[in-house]
Picture 1: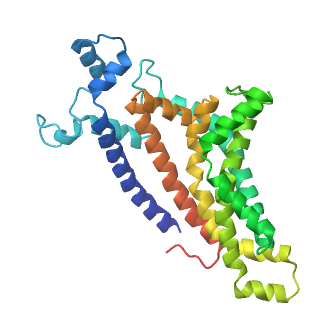
Picture 2: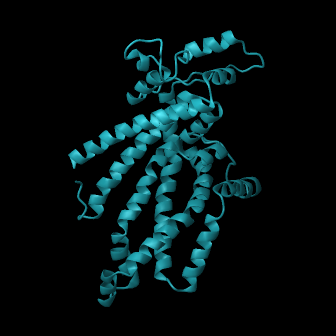
Picture 3: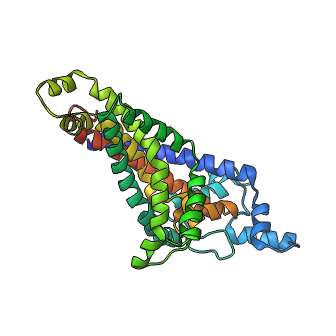
Length: 327
């Protein structure tokens, strides 16, 4: 297993290099250091000297990917891409390009806890609720309960998450005054700010997951071992919980594992609309302000988490199904 994990980590390192290169090229295809300087300096009249000073202070005065004036390996190493990439692989994120120039690593450590307060309860409750709802539909398969349950899921999936957020804020915050419309507080006071976004996102994500799990459970419930279990006299609830659910764990682990990076990165829309100072809102603000230092750090961090989550999924396969071997 150790050899397999080390090999996957080696592949992951190559993927990180590719992701870093693609992020760099895409960002500077749309923006230039001069555009970033004008936006961050502000004001109606920005002189060329101010732009050049801003670029020198933040290291954007070098060539982007290739330095034809340098010699030897310096043609590649004496560039903006090299300077900005090496530090990432040491998990040194540097300082932001905006006027405050804040420490990105410090901001990530501070905001990650806020994002986890939002995403971990949402992940656990969403997974539990969708599995239970899907099992309930399968228990009543072929009946009006199953039919209208699927119709409800399709209807809920047809509604954008943005509609859930706006309608929820209007109904429960502005009209009923049950929760703050936006904001955040530290400690236990955070609960009253997080309840509404968690509930709204739970409703928004429930239908899609439930339909997916229902399809898995229906496929398993028609197999021979399930018919044998029923023939032995086991109740339908026992068959579904002890046999069908257990043998459908691999796709469930895959679906749950793919969501793990989002736990740390936060919800982009949710945090922005509810004013929650997590990593999702941090990323959105960086994109709006054309802050490449923050954008590259968040993309790199998300890629690392995605690679690690895929390795964790493979390890979890061996726990869920003893027939799986890491070779």
